[in-house]
Image (cartoon, rainbow, N blue to C red; front, side):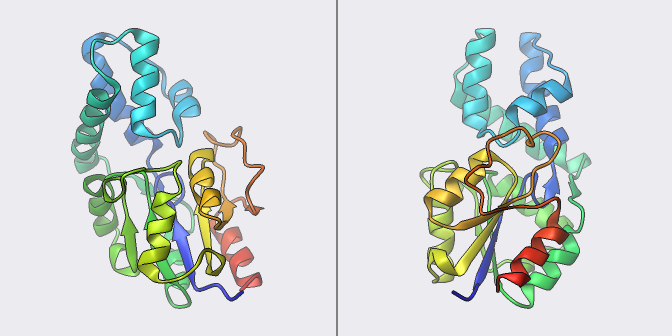
Length: 217
């Protein structure tokens, strides 16, 4: 079936935001005198939903605040951190998005909040390329639940067979697969050890993913 739309993940797929998420968590954990090195943290928590990360950290370090409170503090801290440290775009992101926008409908499907994602998209003049933006606060059940991808399909008025998702993590892949969307996974250094056995394709970068998309259109 002809491809009508591409559904892009955000963190780790379009923007290299792992360091910003790490720095934001560092600020949240600092009052509890919890310090984790960046490589260890990113390797464990890349693609993990914020509340789940908060739950793991709360349990591991017996923190006096709930996972939800920790996650809320981290989300707010990310907004502040991103004001002075904009995440850089992943290789080929701008060019691939521009080319894709001339051929397909585009949706952003992210586990980030609107307050986290929209300023970055505006900073890089990318927001106008998307026909739909589905953030964590737009759904009741964020990734790894299928709801974010199902909402994007509904927004674009297409079915799952007419779309391809692009992801970087097991969490995002699970969300897309459960929505019955074929998925290209582009692993990075922090997610490469995750289980991507359910991916339709594995690619080294966004340029390679674009070649797969055009070959299957």
